Length: 259
Ligand code: ADE
Image (cartoon, rainbow, N blue to C red; front, side, top):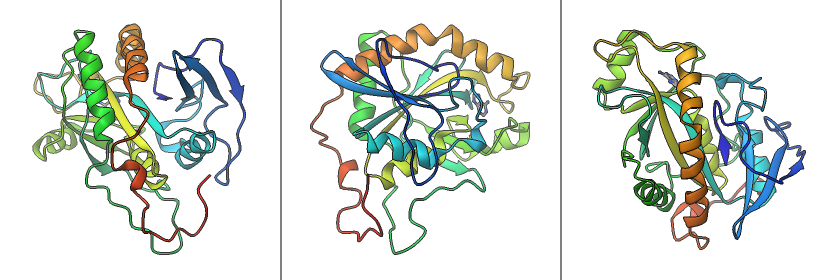
């Protein structure tokens, strides 16, 4: 689990692991605990004191460190802005697509050799279906599909940018969904984003424009709902990985061994 803004700890009675990677240390030590019959690792994406802004997060180190500890399925809750008026604060969206509008972030492990992974469907279909089912059990009306536009930040978007994201089919917008998703795929990990709308983005008609205060407040207000949902998802996630994610690198000659 990679926790976003406002979700800096999740597990009780956890053991803390300080990990190093060829890409430097991850955002924070990783905590591991048993949740029911599952072993869960938790990493706060921004660091527990939120020291890393979205464009400075050590994404490569984070995914590498998780895999090196045995993680194979990643759940990625995150705060997002809604790009449509019906997607108000508190709405959960389970994205099935993303549009990368970031720039200058290291977004691959493969700077040598011919390693071109498929990314047509960036999220794990089984993970998404598991989140959908858990939301239904929690009587949360989660939106089952959506396109997440990922901007470089750390500023929010202008009204024109935001209207453009809606016009090209965007559902929600955030600053951390990429390159996290592609790096997970490059390590053959399952990756499922769970997007919590904290605000309506600046281009949505009648909106006042986003503020940081609003994003953090709404995320805080919804943390209990999110935690309940995540615990149910952890219990319900199948262990057998009957999805294509684990085969993402099959037939490709890798320049190094995965951790
Ligand atoms: N994260 C939460 N709300 C956001 C917004 N409106 N734009 C970008 N990232 C966000």
